[in-house]
Image (tube, rainbow, N blue to C red; front, side, top):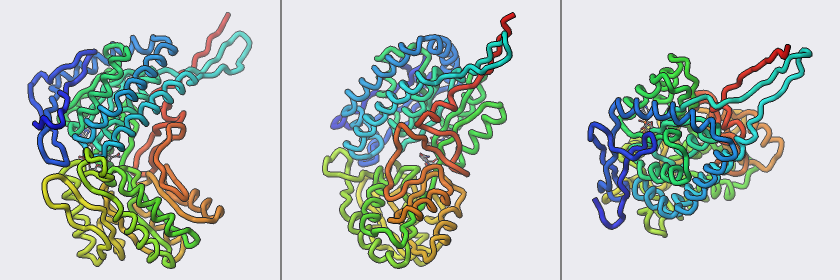
Length: 481
Ligand code: NAD
């Protein structure tokens, strides 16, 4: 373990107490910039998971009966603590996930703000009174659904857990969350903010373990009423099926392969600069990352040149170095995937305009890579790259580009660049994606929902819709006499 960047001890948090797994088994936590082991994450045994679920059942009764003003105050206090601690938490995130310090600390501040937004929005989760027959009071109420089991990945070590925790706790639910075993330190630091803010024991529980064992045990546990997952499509389908077989609803935030359509009337330099900015954020490991660039044939040369120039400006290095603008990939699996996708594209006739070879030395570094003339059957055009590879292809007619954009089973994010309002509407209406952005590739906002269509999942995070999955609607009619 390096002493240079002290990494805090990682524990699980069950029933208000920090604990080891009862088997004593652990996984190593690795710094992706150095490949050094920086810590150990405890793995839950089935008995630990049962204890967490039972704690969530107890915590639910306490939390749902806590007055909403008090709940809101506690969540605001947790958000303030996360903001105060953003620098420290960001450093933990950088050493376990790789992203640059500024990006990491910024992520913590953003999720703290999302927590405030959810806490405030839950105060307005009103029901309604319906005019009914005289002597009858007919109401529709929204109640917290119950204890939630949530499973989140490693690409946003603060963002992914916090979105689930915020919505669950704001709605009045309790939660058992399995954060990623690859980025456990950030999750612990966030949970500590809730503990210090006064969230009652059992309302929030954090576990780690063998992912498949943990999800199977928790989804099957009778107290769990909702399953929430962020991750890959294949795993999402497994968990959704498991939840469905037990008649438990689920929320699925899955992968994507976002097309960027650059129309004939767009400014190619502006489109390239904005798209490249989004492409290389978090080293491309974002479910909404722009990942297929469909450029009108009249602009493709100019767009490619501007994109390559923007990509050359990306400074790859250890995220702890303040000059770094793109860190390493988060794990060796992503590095191997980048090598495989690039080699496959080249074998099928693509040209490497930039990058294309891993950076030598320790660390999972892969440079910004731009591929041109990429054939439609190259794997990078159909498989979510989840890394810093940008394949560029040209099109002649917009209908052709829309058909190509919609040809995959994914439907998460899609982007378009055009100077025509009519074309912008055509893109907005024609793109099969839950998130469409025109003339920018901006990220999520608390006020509006994010989520997918088709294989990219269902349910929404953010916006008033973000609480929907965590609430259940009850009709109550009361005959007065
Ligand atoms: P993976 O499919 O093995 O795992 C994805 C996430 O799911 C990880 O956090 C993992 O711990 C978890 N997981 C795996 N099996 C599970 C199970 N049975 N129960 C509960 N959780 C389980 O792949 P990976 O190598 O970690 O990531 C690669 C792919 O995952 C990427 O190519 C991308 O498509 C997808 N991904 C998507 C997102 C997203 O934000 N939607 C985030 C991370 C990864």
